[in-house]
Amino acid sequence: MTSPIWHPFTQHGLGEPIPTVVRSEGAALFTRDGRRIVDAISSWWVTTHGHREPRIMAAIAAQAERLDQIIFAGWSHEPAEAVAAGLLRLMPPALTRVFFSDSGSTAVEVALKMALGYWLNRGEPRHRILVLEHGYHGDTIGTMSVGARGAFNRAYEPLLFDVATIPFPAAGAEQATLDALEAACRAAPAALIVEPLIVGAGGMLTYPSHVLAEMAAICARHAVLFIADEVMTGWGRTGTLLACEQAGVVPDILCLSKGLTGGAVPLAVTMAREPIYQAHYSDDRARMFFHSSSYTANPIACAAAAANIAIWEEEPVLAQVADLATRQAARLAALPGVRHPRALGTIAAVDLGRDGADYLSALGPKLLAFFRDRDLLLRPLGNTIYVMPPYCIDDAELDAIYAAIGEAAERFA
Image 1 (tube, rainbow, N blue to C red):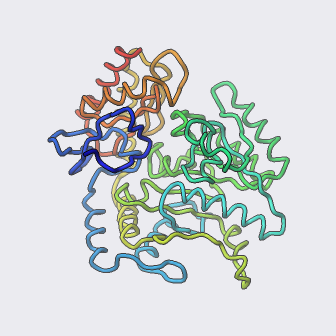
Image 2 (cartoon, rainbow, N blue to C red):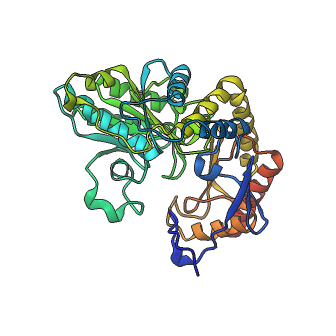
Image 3 (cartoon, one colour):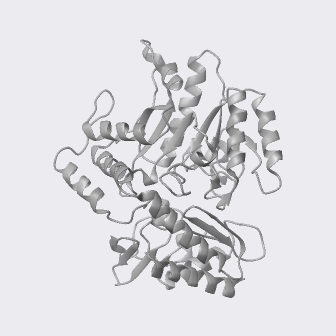
């Protein structure tokens, strides 16, 4: 009998094998049939320090002995307070408020609702959201609405709300992006949401920090809220704690998840500037922020996040990130037969084939099988191969990853 599980982003009709993982350690996954798999994409971009990081695992175990779950509406607990205090130490001082949720998608949903609530409670309701071309922000209705339209969400098009799309700042066309944003901001939208410096699921496309800085400046001039979706880019992925740092940008609203717990368990936060919180602060219950989920600020997840924050504060994580970025860049530069090689911090990507990036490229399943047969967890975005490993990955594991990518380039070019 086949498994009854319906896996995400999986076309079961293709009959592709689905390995069962029984253990993890560092940058490796171990399967039920005895294979050791190098996790080259941090298990979908979440694992930062490595699988089963000892300090995080110890914090989870200790918290499980004390408190498992409690309602967070009108109640609190020490792990959540510790996470909020730690974030205020690490993140830009202007971000004074911390709202907990469960995933990157919900962190973005929260951000959008905060932005709309802010304008409504100020007595000048604004409803329009500006988005960046090729963006991806999640798979809930709101996050699909602010993401690129296409294969990801075609079936749900009738449910998605309308947005204004700003063209991606491709090399040589950056000014067109800024001009389009300037024009769109004159219509007084509520907010602009972007993935800072790199568009993830849209093809691992990078753009310069000065463009990000100017986009934020345009929004500020027109009193448009600037939302930074750092769900993927946060926690060191781009070489700094936040990608926004490289542009000197402090967003009005910041979305964090994935690496927030070191990737161990699900948790997310949306941080906001004080005026956004104050717009909801009132003795009128109708002006409260109407959002929650059953597991908001789960104590065990918060304990993991507090341990991750302690690691960032007490250990040389950024030095480890810089070292990995250097090692990846050297291997990327030596790759033959690939198109558009690009890197940003610990993220590297290349395209194969003659066509542009295409998520539904026929190369996708072939590449997935090719890497799986070589004991590598690489999950190409169609014909775009990207590497985003845990920071603890060693040289031998990186060598295996890039050797396989080089071989794939020869075979599938």
